[in-house]
Length: 80
Image (cartoon, rainbow, N blue to C red; front, side):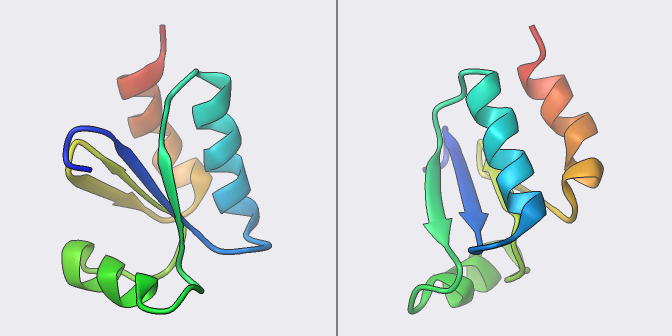
């Protein structure tokens, strides 16, 4: 998923839901992975250095933290 968007989420996470809604609203296709599924949090930690959702990976580069923290970068990538 190096060229696309990958979103690591956790059930019930409001920031995860906000990033998901943002991507959907901007028509961005993405793959979603649940960090509570076996091995997924470890995968995120190994690849991107963090294991707490939301983690948004765009073209191989990871953003993490709250939706508010990620939004400026998302805007640079996806604003029309």
